[in-house]
Length: 250
Image 1 (spheres, rainbow, N blue to C red):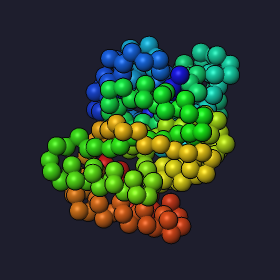
Image 2: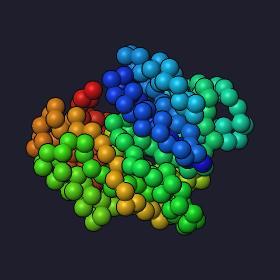
Image 3: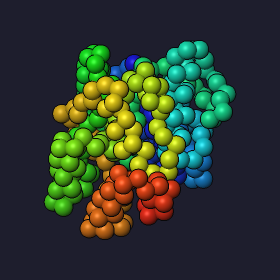
Image 4: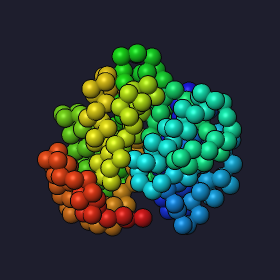
């Protein structure tokens, strides 16, 4: 089974549409929303949505911490088959029991057949995990070019990011100690470390992610900022310093 883990913070406006994609799925999966202290009713909206396989946990703020809390919930349910578990990272109601974790952003939509594609790929026991190709939800030419550039960059260098819906075996996730507890670039760091414990795959399907950062901050500025952050991260500049450059656009 696949457990989908979604870190959220003040996503009330995006959440109904995001959760709607799971209503039509017939795959065997569980969904955990990891709320990092929303003040706009995000957690309450999720709890009222009515998805039978949806659980909500409350975790310390920070994408890495929230995703790690979701992974702990998945492991706890697999081991204890509990419906309510108190943990240092948060309270789980209910938890999940999957053996593959899929980390998904709240503005990212899966393509049809995504979970089946993951399950098929992970039958190869040598695979530690992987990701999808990426397209942006704005059909304008500049955004199509950006999506293509991201896919090309990933193909050349393998430096994939959280927008591409990273999936991983629980065993590999545990071997790595989860996501590093850093303020930014936890996805890039994780991707680099994941390749050290097993092969990764890029599935030939596209996830679709939102363009709110590009639209709010500007195309050129956002592209330059993202490249600068990536270069500085590889140059070992502190993620805490980098996070100050990366403003919240919710």
